[in-house]
Image (tube, rainbow, N blue to C red; front, side):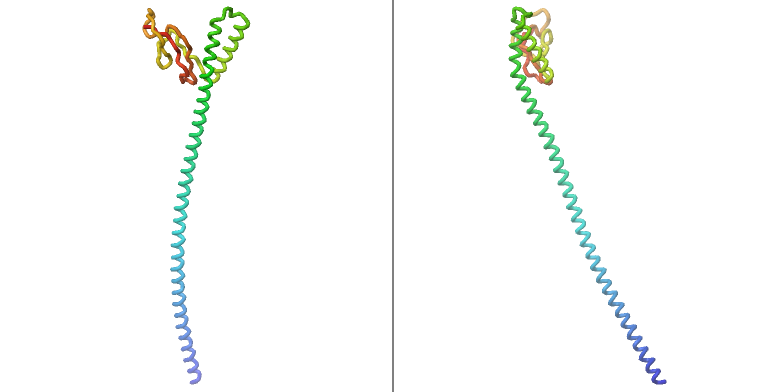
Length: 193
C-alpha cells in the first residue's frame, strides 16, 4: 500500500509540476502574444504613416496635374488669340493694299466719257466684283455725305460755309472703309461751318 501511496504522491507531484509548467507556458504564451501585439501595433503605425505620406503625394500630384492642365488651357487660348490676331493683321494689310486699286477704279468710272462702252462696263464689273468679295471678308464703306462729322470715321481736309448747318459733311474726296467695325481708312471730307 505504501508503494501505492508513493506512486500517488509522485503522480500528484508530477501533476503539480506539469500544472506549474502549463502556467509558465501560459505566461510565456501571453508574453509572446504581447510582443506580437506590440509588433503588429508598430507595424500598423508604420503602415498608417506610409499611407498618410502616400495620400500627401497623391494630393501633390493632383495639384500639379491641375496646374499643368490650367497652364495648357491658358497656352491654347493664348495661341488661338495670337493666330487670330495674325490673320486679322494680314487681312487688314491686304485690304489696305487693295484700297488704292478701288480708288483708281472709281476714278476711271467717274471720268469715263461713255459708261455704255465695253471698256467702262468691264471696269465697272471688276469694281463691283472686287467690292463684293471685300464685303464677304467684312469690309464696308463708311457713309459720310450729309451726315454729322464724326472724327472717329471722318478726316476733315477743308471747311466751307453752308446754309445746312454746322459740322455736316458736304463733300467726300476719298471713301473711308471699315474692316469688322474697325476703321481701315477714314473718309476724307469737307465739313460745313
